Length: 271
Image (tube, rainbow, N blue to C red; front, side):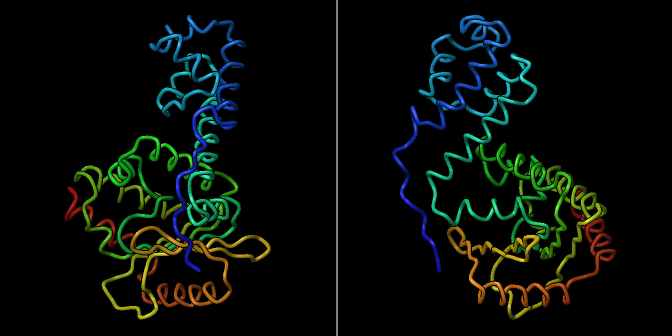
């Protein structure tokens, strides 16, 4: 069943999530032996702004959280807390379709992806993601998601990517070259199988989708539609998409030939 985007929640400023993040900042500052004035001078903001962040009265951007982490030698604790804050806000702000699949993806031992228009978010370079998403906070979240999913023990990932994605310019020529080089690098990693689908008609393939399979064989899917996407665990949906993915793999180039095609496109179009 399709799930529509929910209205934005009123929860925001001075929320429990913001206060939790602020507490992490305050503890890190106190551990470093600094008062708010000295910390403000280190990160080039007003003391009042540091106070607002620590009290949970405002949400800071990722670059500020990163500066705080460096100034306080927090070893990534503040950055980690910022990402947790952002995920908590998304859970409040958006409908289930937006947040459920990333959770299933994070715990899966097998992920299968079919992409029709752009490189899947798990495989995007930061420059490519920046051209797609525009918002620095959204880019930071995507890079964090990649790090979580692809870190050991990483799931097995099978990707079928339509050939047109290799030719569709996102960002600059340099961005495209870097992105395709990164796809080649990923294709050599253990557990990742990347196949390119030539320009052929596969009747069952109507839209991009991903399937996350857990160790106990439970599955969830994310299906892209015209305006957003749908998360489903319906057995009928999953049965259809499993068959579709098998058909896509059968029509796609094998892994070695896919690498050769990516290299050819880099050399002929993106140099």
